[in-house]
Image 1: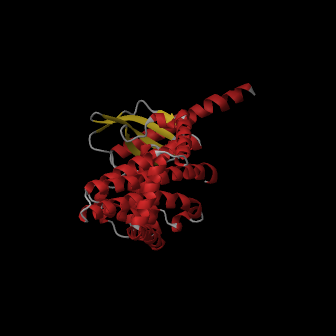
Image 2: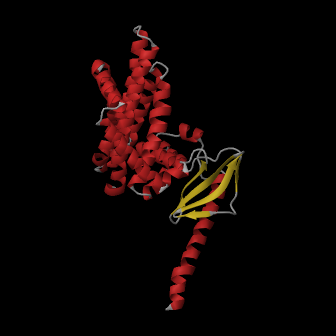
Image 3: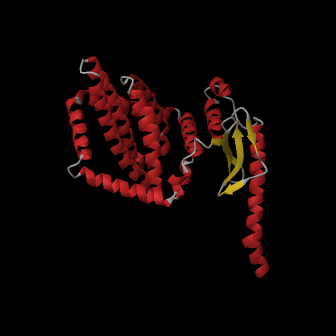
Length: 334
């Protein structure tokens, strides 16, 4: 029995790992040689029948960046991933290969794109929980945080017509995208794979095994930094028009990729997350339009900017609620 136990516990896992590394090495070589990735030109010129498959393959095997150098002699195995050191100039990163009997995905992850390592630490999760509870406590006490919340709600009432229009327009585009997915399910799945590949490339999937606290903090970090600040507040500063146009396109594509046609019954479970997160981006879009209205109406850019910052603050509160629900949803329900 001891030799058999030795084979099962030591030799067999080692052989499996060696096989995975060799498979990953072969896939990385083929990917680097351009054998796995369709070009963007191929995707754009493809027929309607071929385009979904090419787009999905483009999402799973995005072309390697020019000038990429790859070290295939120093692999690192992490679960079903095999990571190889790689670099483009001075930008150091890794190529990650996912396999399950075959290579499922190959891509380059720059260090600057990956999530900060400290976010995946359990201490960060507990810190995010304490900050969330403290923030909630301040909202129910006389404090500047409560005053800003009340001022933001008053702004919604003062511009209720514009607020209603922004909600109907953007939620309407999301609903339109969801309906279009029923007629083009293969293309919708390809777009969904494109989004999934982008999230995997920055390392969001790594947080799913770290528990609800860590996952909630990571979700909030990403949605606040990338969604609400970089693609929300910053373009809204240009009198609201850029963020309005950006979110019009974003909501249509979101609806297409997250349609009930693809998610099925899981759509109902995910619906609170969608409503909360999309509302956060609607709020900052609305704030940009109020900035435009106040500036054009003679009240001045400064007053409009304060309105925008109030909606940004309220949007962050919605994202906080969404992060906790989505973390619970992913960890418990899915």
